[in-house]
Image 1: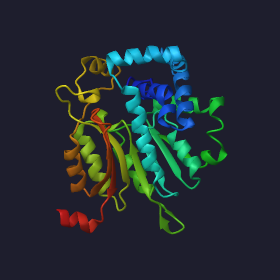
Image 2: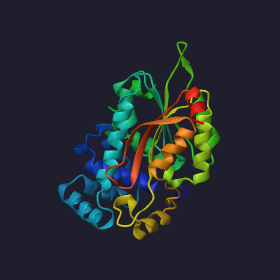
Image 3: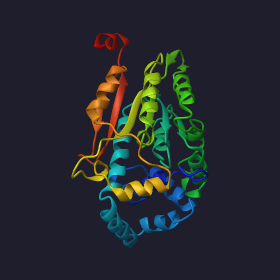
Length: 297
């Protein structure tokens, strides 16, 4: 990321949500927050938001997308829909740590659906400042009511530098409620590909070593391939766009290799999603009983 600016890729995802989120069943909070973040972001983002709100503007954006990365907006929305549905299956008192929350309102919607649920939103400080401003928008006040404020917290956190702090937050999130440990889920959406491989594996090892490891819901990029589509293709234009914004892709991993890595560290993959080979996939991984981990080794 460029110092002093919110994440350009997070704003691009917000634009996808504003353009296509309704037709993919994303909650109204997601659309409203994406709209507000784009309007307050500065630069060309407010103009893009205006385009996304009109039929003619959407046709123009669709034409641009077809030339650059066909299917991107739909991919972003399908990915979010899958994550939301997985999160809706969690216990009503689950605690969520959402790393790289960007400008997504899905967590707020989930907390409103289940009043006992708690959410900690984590992101780079520049992105969080824009998110906080967007949440003050009058159109979002019905989404951020008093009950939600009591259950939602935000904290600045940047990986890999703040890896130790993330581990601490995951450990604290297992604080007991009425004598019973609260289940914790760590959501890492659209983050892993921007981190060095060694630091990411070290983070996984530290999470797995916790007395009560969190459930993991995260996304990753598969290696590129000849004639691939979406993120599975090597797009020079995409690489240049990301590099100019200091957000290059640093890590890719084949799904089966990642499944094996997770199992080696005590996680079982309970569900996956790959949008029919677009090149980015999602994994829902649950901690295995310690005895199972010992037997597998």
